[in-house]
Image (cartoon, rainbow, N blue to C red; front, side, top):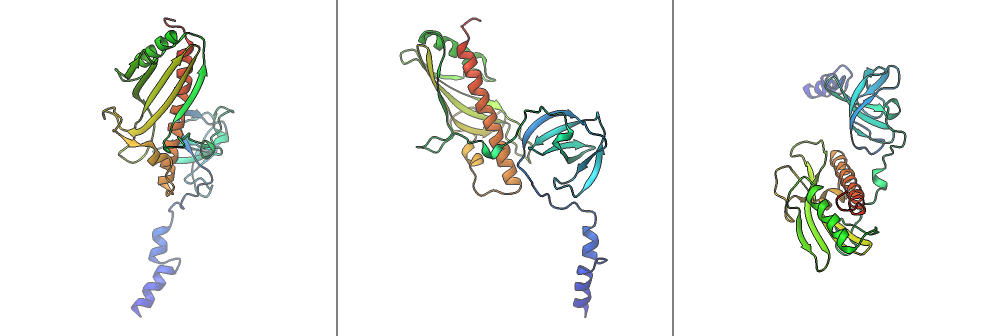
Length: 264
């Protein structure tokens, strides 16, 4: 008899178990993939609903036109914002994001070396200048373009080859320990009017850790995880998005640096 009453309490709407669940937010249904995008953006709609989940089932707060909210991540439809100490989802159309901003993280292929399976950005670029001029421009870039000193590990004039290892800051909001940077190796080979580059040996790590080929966690462990869901998958996509951002920026910076005459 006691067991029967206990079961009734657990299943009836007025029972103890049901009462404990009252008012709790439903599990978040993830209608799209989201990636880090930090900044403060203005609400453009009037009395805009803020949801505890991204499936529009739990309106907990509202925002007014002209209100500025900090944004942590975005997708093609939703943005994650913060207000009054809580994290909310708001439709991206209610924020003054650039119209051209499109987030498609799963469609971005991270380049991998076919032989090793490791992440590797490679390219051949034609730019004005002799081999010696390109070497000089590259040396200036390695010396001034990064947060660490003594980036160059190889500076071989005979083969016109330079190899350096350094890092870029990344922005991953996650439970500790956080990854705050991505280390990488850049190899350049210069010729008259041309250079070849390879950016590889990516590893995620924290501030203050030493720079070296053996430090940090190999980026492939984060970016290419096949068994990930929920928070693990969200974290994986954030690392992937940041690595892709760093890869694009390095290629752009390299092209600019080696196209600029030395001393300009």
